Length: 424
Picture 1 (tube, rainbow, N blue to C red):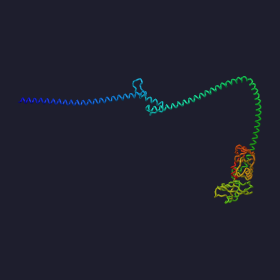
Picture 2 (picture 1 turned 135 degrees about the vertical axis):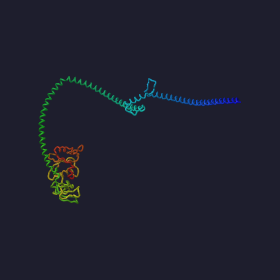
Picture 3 (picture 1 turned 180 degrees about the vertical axis):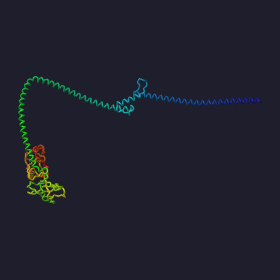
Picture 4 (picture 1 turned 45 degrees about the vertical axis):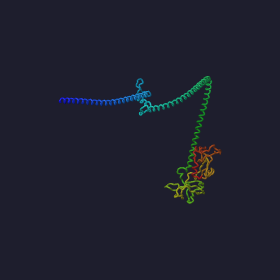
């Protein structure tokens, strides 16, 4: 029984050992399956990674080949690569050196230009300018060549003319040499004649010197005469200069304020005529006479005359008895001589003006002489002193009488100055 139990125990122990090993084997099998599965997953992942890496390598190789193709094309188009070696890569350092070199040759390429894309437009612009310059130079060259051709033609013509002239001169020289003896004889004859002429001219010179001395004596006498005449004229016209101009010529005797008229103390006995004008002056500042108005003679008696008062300056300073009248041209005592030149128009004809001046003691002459005191100038004239018409109207200053008056020192009085003191 005990043995059976021992056998039974032994069998049970063996069964337990077998079961353990079975479990172990199963575990190992499971582990193996797990490891196999894991290994299979890692293998698939590794294969996937290897495929991805292979594709990436292929794409990289493709991009490299494309880049290499582009680089080769760029090198072939741009240059700057080792033409002897297998490397077709553009040498960027050489490119940059070339751009720096272009900057020194082309002012348009500044420091902001970095690559050939920016360099080329600047070079093309410079090229266009150079082409234009070359065209202009070619045009200038063509023009200069044409001028040179013209100069050459002219020189050729000049040379031909020169040769012709030289030939002519040589012929003339030969003729002159052939006639030298004859001409020498002729010149000797002319020399003798010239010596005779010199003697005659010398005699004429001495006669001319004597004539000039006589003319000088006459001129000196004439200067003396003119100086005396000038003094006489100065004495005659003293009333028109300096303080004499301001001396009163008449005095107001009576005034009619309503009529604007007055009576003065000179008349025909004093060579006063109708139409003569005066300035009326009265007391102003101490020792001075101030102008009050203008006056024109309208009626004349022997010892008195009536005047119209015009251009009254101040209504509060009317003309009063005792005021004086002044006219620098009017002279009540002296006698002067005048000549009229030009055309005279206005209220008086030349004849009437002559009569009016005569009443004032101014005698009108037909022509200027040493006794003439003044030349009165009118407007332009259309006929000469003989009544013949001029081709164009002549101003009085263009007439011969004007030049004569200046040479004799005669006073020249414009018509406008005369009209200021005579109502014409």
